[in-house]
Image (tube, rainbow, N blue to C red; front, side, top):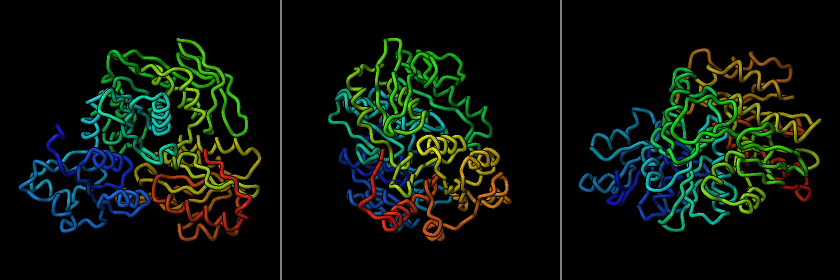
Amino acid sequence: MKFDNITHVYFVGIGGIGMSALARYFKAVGKHVAGYDRTQTVLTAELIAENIEVHFSDDVQAIPEAFKDANRRNNILVVYTPAIPKDHSELNFFRQQEFAVVKRSQVLGVITSMHKTLAVAGTHGKTTTSSILAHILKTADFNVAAFLGGIARNYNSNIILPTSEHDVINVVEADEFDRSFLTLFPFAAAITSMDADHLDIYGSGEELIKTYQQFASQVDEKGLLALRKGLRMQPVKALTKFYAAGTQSDFYADEISIRNHRYWFNFHSPNGVIEGISLGLPGRHNVENAVAAIALAMHVGVKEDAIRAALQGYKGVKRRFDIRFSDANCTFIDDYAHHPQELRAAIMSVRELFEGKKITGIFQPHLFSRTRDFAEEFATSLALLDEIILLDIYPARELPLEGVTASWLMNKINHVNKILLNKADILNYINKHEPEVLITLGAGDIDTLVTPIQQLLERKYSVHEFKNHKQ
């Protein structure tokens, strides 16, 4: 597959974080870009502001004429996400008319095959790790093209574009959903975790691990595979090293401490020690993510000064432990956590930073199948909160499953201070109950509550006292 003759690129599901990054890429390289998404979001509004035409109804008539001209089908590429249902009329129109219709992962595979690629895989941790890695390379003046699964605050985007076509290093999230990462053949890669997830795709945790093994085998034999310590993997052709935080490994952090809401640590590698690294992200798991990013960066030649400067100035990713409001009365944090292990990590990070404070969590479960498959684990993680507010399950691409509801999950949580609310009632509840530390959690449309909650807190408490601690 080559894109030289492509002049128009149409995205079915353009509002997705990965899809929108590709849309921005094609726009930047001079293609005419448009697309469909079912929901209007801040991200789709940004795409429209960037002169990308987006509509929100599944309607063939709404597709711009230039993108459905069958006489020019050799110049038109249609990209879709596997989350799009099989009966989608626009997608079926393009297939019936024999346009070139490809998955997002296939396009990313082609783009990244043209240059050296560093990939980060894992059921959680990959967005933060890949954005740290991209920022390190950018700080070191490498020519970086990064395709990220979140909005990096340093660049206010989910994509970093290269400054030229020469000597590009790609940084990409290797997404296990629908086995998408098997289109990648990276020079070096990190695997942050292989916890069971997407069982609607894989059927079992064992099958998921087999697919990670396949991905690992695709890393270049001259490259590096960095595995979080404790992960088990059969030998592959690439040099395999382990990384950790707080315990010795091939790459590891020690002397970990917190000063003024920042982590400080020393980084150890086979080449020596970098002392006194400062990172503004909360949670030891993020120190571990930073270790993985540093390991990959060093493998392509980044030096100590650039590593130190990059982590000092790294601002994080929106919706990853995103502190939206903080004053003497209340702190409000937003986090994308949607897997039990991610919930545990986020909640324990809050406990570490705000010791002794009452922690209220608003959680929106994402997918009926994930809620069913990990109900007991979700219940255990949510019980770590002092107060639990549960929203209805966000269906995403799924139809309801009989008996799998938010109230069903609620009954499994061994906690006295729990409540089930509608999204429409959240602001009134917060206004009446005045939480000390509030965290919104989930990957669905809970993000539409974030700005209204922040605005409520800014009105409720004097704005001049507000201290923005965004990491």
